[in-house]
Image (cartoon, rainbow, N blue to C red; front, side, top):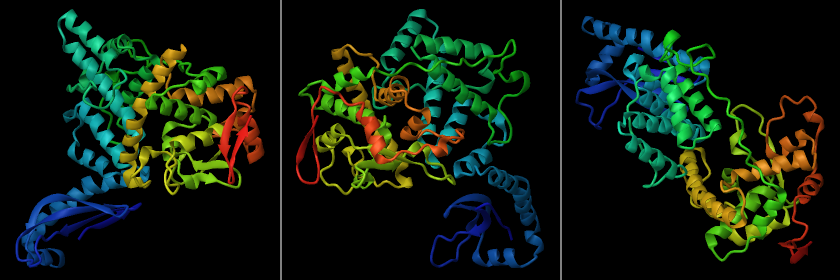
Length: 469
């Protein structure tokens, strides 16, 4: 009766039997198929196998009203939705279900809209983006809870609790607040008060800007039927009476290269501190690698001929685009760190953080969760090291990438296009980028200039241990 396809999305009516002997009345479903996966949505009708055959193949008067109901629902609801998703190339089952369940925007709260978006991103394996939305709604929940408190003492205590739990995002000690926020509450006054509260709990302007832009995206609801707030009710803007999102300058999170050497030289018998120190150093010398990319590295990424790690950075992988490889010279301290902390069985991951998790898209959430679980104690240990060495108390793995880029551009005066290629940043807008090419020798010469000149390294080649000064 109805069989529709558009850009890989399929819709048809089916009758699903539960037993081998098909003698009972069974429900009729809308079956939606996408990328070899399908989900069933109830129509509210049921037939026996004989009745279903008549329904499909005969023009009986008793079926006329049901056929019209199903056809109208398809024409007026399902088909327009599928067509819109197909045109925008934005289909997911979560997005479809969200729209079907809430055709009336007035019935959805801010927290529910956030959760729908988070579910949709997780289904599409966009775990990193889902965490941005999760962080934003969690911050909004804290503010809503704060607004509900009446006594100043309670408000002060809650602010202190938020600061205390600032860096705890998982586990029993994480501060989890559940509140209901209605869209009509989101006014310029609400947002102004929210910004002040976030500053009180030590959220920096850069993060405030991210949270507010994320909320703005939810309100605009570009994947839905219409925005949740429009015209005078829309709270954002530059005009008088509207809320203007703060720009929030980028926080300086880079070190002097001499401070990197201090961390590298830090001696400890504490295994957690030693791992944090070595992973930090590995990331810095490895083109300022992202911690997630370090976790994903496999021994197969090591090119023995060039003595480089060659991989595709997860963050820059985009469907339909030509992949860009990143080449990381294997410097002596990096080899030492692999020898100390790497998996001895060299047919999987280089480091043990993701052991037991197959690197396939279906496992992306599990991979991201494991990365975050490993990152928390490393960043905590780095703060201990920073305290002992009198460095920035907010020291984290994020400093490695910024320090690498800053030192190459500001101290070594390396061509910015070269630096972008080393760290995997896009060079699409640089018209001369195609003329800038580096070989393995040049890459190694450049990164070797970062090494501590007073430290002697021992590395392993194919035959014996060699000392590199």
